[in-house]
Amino acid sequence: MLDIKEIRKNPELIQKKLNLRSGNYDLTELLDLDNKRKEIIVDVEEKKAKRNKVSKQIPALKKEGKDVKDIIAEMGELSSNIKELDEKLKEIETKQRDILLATPNVPNELVKEGNDDSENEEIRRIGEPRKFDFDIKSHWDLGVDLDILDFERAGKISGSRFSIFKGKGARLERALINFMLDVHTLEHGYTEIEPPAMVKSQTMQGTGQLPKFKDDAFKVEHDDLYLVPTAEVPVTNYYRDEVVDFNNPVHFTAYTPCFRREAGSAGRDTRGLIRNHQFDKVEMVKFAKPNESYDQLEKMTNDAEDILKKLNIPYRVVRLCTGDLGFSAAMTYDIEVWMPSYNRYVEISSCSNIEDFQARRANIRFRNDDGKLEYVHTLNGSGLAVGRTFAALIENYQNEDGSITIPEALKNYYPYEKIEK
Image 1: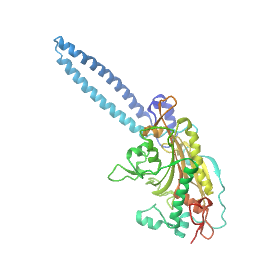
Image 2: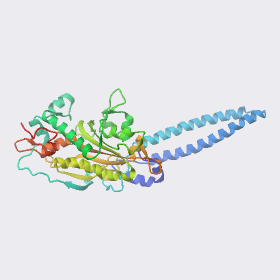
Image 3: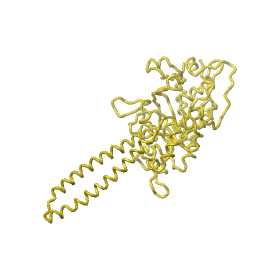
Image 4: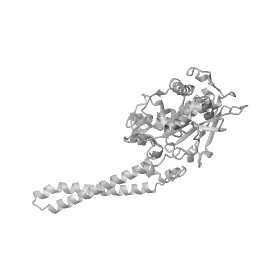
């Protein structure tokens, strides 16, 4: 959530930054409400001051034998008027908060201006895409041929865009999860937690999923609970309504299944494992002091990249332009893995600095060097999307005979050197 104080101080600058994003976010109504709020506050304070002054005079007037009936009636009417104004003030403040909750973060000044993902800025490429001397297969064909993926029965059980990992495929998915968690905890210094897979609406609101992405969420019918779209949601809320002590763990990693409707994505990468309603993901979340958060963003992005480096799968890193930036993010690096069957790079991780946008919504603060309370900066990133890693692995490591060679990095996690018929 944006800081209303900053909007009051720099309305033109904030509006200019919001105009760089995709979508229409006009601050006019918010500022109009703010002006009305100020007028009501002045009016209420004047009326309360008058009521207090006159109320103190009434006992003395009574003592002097004066008739105070009209004065008491006037004060009663004034009190009713104050109550009405207080209710109107509360209504205005609720409307203001609703607008702020639906308004995205502003881009960091380093983020390039652009309309969509075609204008994202490539930062680096690591590894050369493999040149195949045979006709390659897509991961969905490889998976079905090797009997490690079953999309047909997943569809029978749950509908479209669900998957079943089977046999050596299920074990490979589990191996990737354990591998990622071990690298992040043992080498990168994250603390592992296993959070709930269902969260309250307040929790979803705290990270920016509500109200903006309500249509993408799976809600439990009879309870105020949502299936998590990403572990970012429960993990970022770990310190909700708390003052963070940076002597305690502030870098977390977590594996969860994730659930998304993917509203509006029909026809986009809907075959195979790339865009399913349920998928596995290992997430990284950091709480940082404001002056350290961008260094932490670089570190987090490198941590996600390290998984692909160890697996020796080619990828590139792009910095999203203003028009492609996510709702809560001030800056985002996307890591895109090479997918041979697509003949292009496909997103496998997004690492974002949210600055104080989520902390303001979730009331997560720390004491600065002056002892004053200040909002933390929150960061999150995929480390990695497991199903997409599975897909990239089997496509990049496929052999002419249809088998899959398992990368050396997984030898302590997976008992087979190859997956073959």
